[in-house]
Image 1 (cartoon, rainbow, N blue to C red):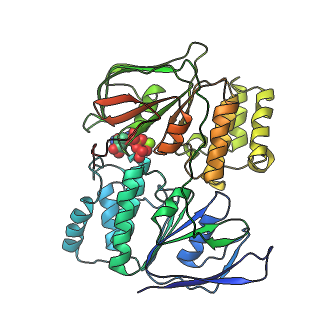
Image 2 (cartoon, rainbow, N blue to C red; image 1 turned 135 degrees about the horizontal axis):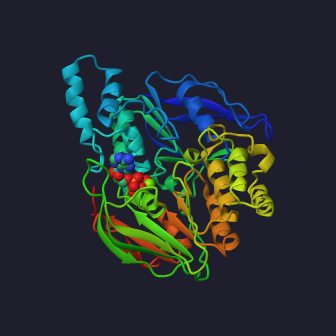
Image 3 (cartoon, rainbow, N blue to C red; image 1 turned 120 degrees about the vertical axis):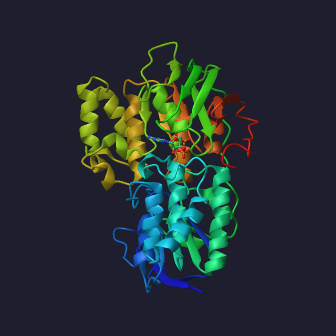
Length: 444
Ligand SMILES: Nc1ncnc2c1ncn2[C@@H]1O[C@H](COP(=O)(O)OP(=O)(O)OP(=O)(O)O)[C@@H](O)[C@H]1O
Ligand SMILES: [Mg+2]
């Protein structure tokens, strides 16, 4: 049985160090973005001391057999197919090739039906990548598993399922699993619950779930129309089949659905980045309509450019005026992200949450409408989610948005119209106040 012990202190606030012990079980640590969770996770996984955080950590030797699941699910996926990824990970601890084959076949059973084992991991949806990382981690038979936000693209039901598997793993291996998260409501899953802030690391004894406050009804003219829309990736079954729908007019339109059901694909079709195999899909607004898409992986939007280079390109293409850049910058200052501190940075030098908020603020003041945001709350803590929601509802009140997310409470409480993609043949309009997803859909 593994037990993890270390000392944590906040030298700016007190010279005192607290001793923390984690034994077998699932331990959930909540922290807003910017509190140093990734450095905390790194320390637990390989002993690297945090720098530039408010806390100091010491007195710890990582147990051998410690495994870290990084926040960015693409990091660490290196093979050219899902099946090779599984085989590579098993080769670390098994020599016999027949046993590797056997184990790979067993692990494939743990993947959702939507994952074709022959596909390239880079083509997996965000949630599918996270599930693959969880399957890889359990195949390594860890003595300590540290998860840095690694379940944040999963929808509620999928998350429940993965948490059940993690609990079983902790029991079977008699090991601690330490899960750092920006989703406050994830604390409900913990055998022990903790909160990391800029001034303390404390046990949460009185956990109550957070809820968004109600907002007055919005109205807008945004509609999407699908006419017999059919689409499939080459060599795969149809992902979307003969979808027919005209949505009711909205200010903010939400799109919900299981992991891998095709939400991001729908956005790429809306943007014309992908083309339908048959039928059509389009966006309508009463006024000027020039949609922009904020990627689920926001670093893909910047590539190797800095935020400053990307903004300059928008200005060169007359998509952003100097006055509107000033407005976006003052929003970022309110979010404690002064432009001068981030403009020279490339995406990999900044936390995802920062890149995402910067891109959302700039696109919202640029000449785009509607703004399509794919998983906008990923990596944001509760207060940051509340701030983003306020921004969408207040600052963007002359604009429209399409929010694609597994974060059901965020979508249902922010959007005036909501669509649920339930299967290749079923995209329906749902009542945001009464929606309960069909748990028996694809992959469940
Ligand atoms: N380029 C591609 N080639 C083949 N299959 C793909 C490709 N891109 C996506 N897929 C598959 O299409 C399905 C839908 O992917 P998509 O990213 O649209 O799902 P999603 O609903 O956005 O999921 P998530 O909530 O996990 O982000 C998934 O099963 C994914 O593996
Ligand atoms: Mg997606």
